[in-house]
Length: 106
Image 1 (cartoon, rainbow, N blue to C red):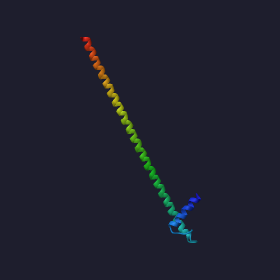
Image 2: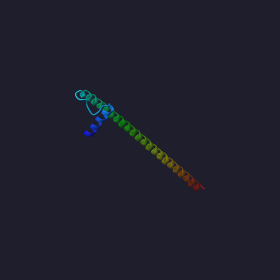
Image 3: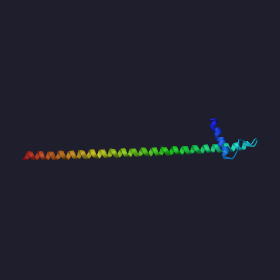
Image 4: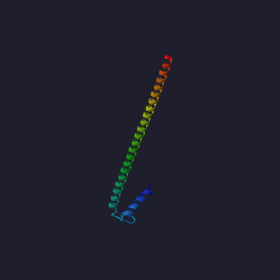
């Protein structure tokens, strides 16, 4: 943890054009400003992460909905196919019955 903090402070120093550290007695204000900047950056990062998580959740929900719709469509197709098959079988049985009755009458 300390190493990460040191790295951040070093990067800040480079970004701000600063050298090694505070300039002695007057460094307190700069440190406060830098701390505030760091806090703001951390807040922004957290907000970005939250937004990304929300987007991912939304995408997952959409995918789940699509999968459910596809499954429902598959079930509908199966039902229609089964119904069609049942109807065809019934028609065949009816035709066979008619033939049998014709044969008996003759």
